[in-house]
Image (cartoon, rainbow, N blue to C red):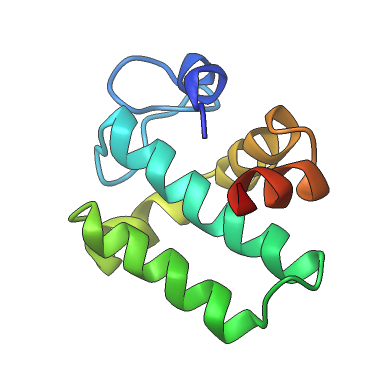
Amino acid sequence: LECGRLARRLRPGGSFGGRDDSAGATTTTTIAVAVAPGNAHCLIKTGTMKPEKAQSIADGFLAQQQISPQASDAVKNTPGFRDLMNAYIADQGGCSALVEALQR
């Protein structure tokens, strides 16, 4: 999925919401950490997938991107993260449209 709009919400160096994330994550890491749980959230919310399976896929995606659970948690615990994840979902047209795109 195209994440350009999400990247534009981030400041140089991976910060968002006017703050640097506590892990000093790169923009690429921050986007991946927003996209993975955003996708999982929508897969669960739409009833497309059970929570355990959706979380497993999200975790696998982050592992494939070589993002450790510790780095992921640091980004997720940064103030404004939930807003960033929700912005990603909104940019994709909401959960139904996001899931439809994932299924293509």
